[in-house]
Length: 204
Image 1 (tube, rainbow, N blue to C red):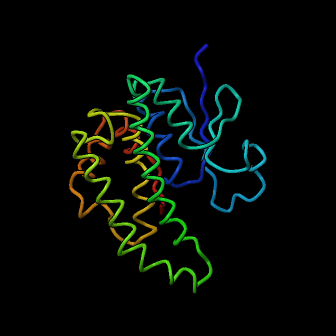
Image 2: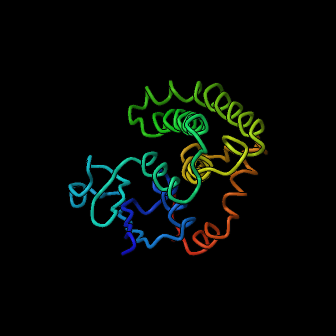
Image 3: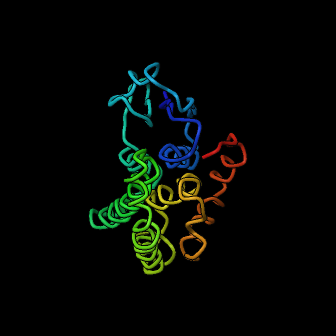
C-alpha cells in the first residue's frame, strides 16, 4: 500500500512551502492541511513538538522542515551521491537558515526599541553579507546550491522567498541574478509549476 502524506501548516508559504514543493515534485499522494495563523491550542497537540509544520506519514507525525525536506529529497533522487555531497547540501541549507533566522528575529521582535536597533545592521550588513555569499555559492556550483546539480537544498532555498520578501518589504532577490535565476528554475519544474498554479492565494 502506498504511503499517505498529510502536511500540516499555516495558510501561507514560509517553512511549509519547501515540503509542499518536494511533495509536488515527487508526485506523492498527499493532503495539504492549512490552518489559520491563530492556531492556538486546537491542533498544536497533534505536532510532535507543538509546532508547525509537521508531516504525517501513514498517520505518524514527523516535525522539522529541514529534516522532512532531507527525507523527502532522499525519496525523489535529490540527495547527494555520497556523504560529502550531502554535507555540501546541508551547509547551503544551514547558511540559508542563518539568514532567515536573522530576518525573523527582527520581524517578530515586538519590543520596539530592540527591533529598531536590529534593523540597521540587518538591512545594511547581515542581509547583504548572506545574500552575496549565497550568490557566489550558487555561481560556484553551476547555478545550484551544491554539487552542480538540482537537490532538495535548491527547493528548500527557493520556496520561502515570498514569505521573506513580505517580512522585509522588498525583493531580496532583485540584486542577485544568479539566486533569482535559481528560484525561477525551481518554480518552472513542471510538477512545481503545476502546484503553484493551484496554490491558494495567501498574504505570505
